[in-house]
Length: 424
Image (cartoon, rainbow, N blue to C red):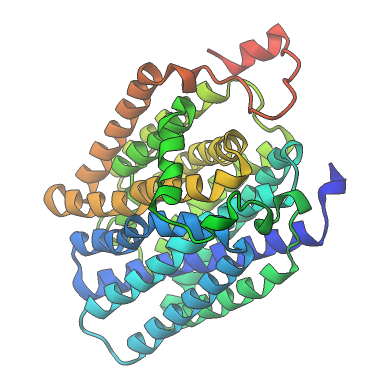
């Protein structure tokens, strides 16, 4: 396995760390900024809506671009655009703002950049290594991502406490460094972007070409079940969007405490991901995915009920650890189920589902928080997530019964003792 390490993998891992650190610092500082400006839960939710709208509107174009243009170029240009947005917010904050409107407008611009970069960057691991090496890379790629979601919130919260301008400047610098890493990534010859244009007469992507990703997902119950599970589960369980309100109103902490609370999510996810790098999930893949989502819901309920910072911290550890299992399974299952020349389009559609679960889920949480208060919204969302996991267990038997990842050698059967340890 150590033979997989090389300049391309190191560049990919480095760009992931820089980009994700920047994004998490951005979300932490942005939530605190908007809360300080308005003190309305609904406005915290509007951040998610402003991020999601471009992803939804550009899904067809973004997927086609990811399949027709060098994914490294798309990712690099997107990172430069994100850096520009970070600098623009820093300038606005330095002017002594009193309204959140311009901030939301810049979030929309960031969402446009993300709509193109997400399917491109998420397809890159499968372009760098062969199918048998993808689980190895996904585990390490995820570990890097989890490390960044620890560093990013702490960086964003700490810098915000020092000077509200500082975290947005840092976001810009980190995105520029991320963009500089993409030229060092080399693709496998068989995966080169120039080799996947099936019809030279159709060199420009059209609606028919772009819709193929959606049709492919609809025709494969495992893909449809796995992707829609993330949409609906996290749509109702998006408690993280309300953390600025929870931190101040229920836990009595400021920007630094908020940063560490967000970082707890990274710590829990990183711990689980490190285990997965040594002991990746190879059996009972579908059942493990559904049980992890149910555990996510239970921990979300605990977060909503508590008024103790320590309990909230532990709840974040648990829910993020469960989410890390879900991310690992989906990040491995989806690319290996989809032909290489369809990955950009399929991952662009999946990006809408992920955006729906995260950003649109944040909007749902903001609306619910405005009506029920932060605690009521989080508890209700956690209960809905558990119900979703149970429903998908029954509604998608093809997903539930997935035993191992496609395209890999069928693992040897586990002995009885190991199966008993795994549980039902």
